[in-house]
Amino acid sequence: MIADTIQQIERQLAGKAALIAVTKTKPVALLQEAYDAGCRQFGENKVQEMAEKQPQLPADVQWHIIGHLQTNKVKYIAPFVALIQSVDSLRLLQEIDKQAARYNRTIDCLLQIYIADEETKFGLSADEAEALLADNALDELSNIRIIGLMGLATNTDDQEQVRQEFRGLKALYDKLAQIQRSMIQFSELSMGMSGDYLLAVEEGSTMVRVGSAIFGSRN
Ligand SMILES: *Cc1c(COP(=O)(O)O)cnc(C)c1O
Image (cartoon, rainbow, N blue to C red; front, top):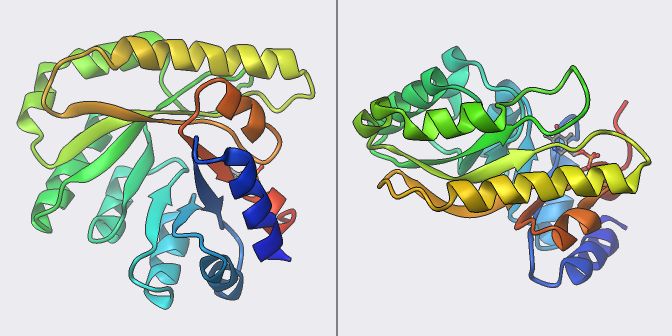
């Protein structure tokens, strides 16, 4: 069942975007099922939940943090996290760099951009992201790489609104990708979830984060 859905989504993505299976709140047995169906990239939004699941799955799983990350929790995921998709401040980048250095790693990050017409979503504005990428303080950070942007569209049935939000994020991505600094190496645009991933791929997503369409709704 899970395997069929994953294969169907992979066919739709047709190699244009990577599938990140969003496994928050789901038990390890379901993650293993997704792994057996070929998934190697999992997204979780809580540090503790990810740190508990990680040792229970094969070592070649790439773990993505997709939810708001507090600086004091970075240390729990620094040894293994593959991509932190929800960076929204210089202070957080500095902490990720510090913890990555302890493990002799470089940790890849995305800046989370606020694109939705909703009050509850985290993220930077376009101007804030641009200012952050221009900040001289980034020169001190040799254990992080900023490899792109992530955004969540408004939760609405209005497909045209969602498309415009994705289009705006892609335009920002294209602009910021021009920046020439060693720690900025754009290659990933993470946008699209269960309800809008096909639209997101049409608008240039390289990475979709799909949970309920694979694993069923969360309570
Ligand atoms: C939960 C979550 C998803 C997946 O949502 P679905 O609608 O279940 O696919 C994607 N991105 C983020 C940031 C999430 O928190």
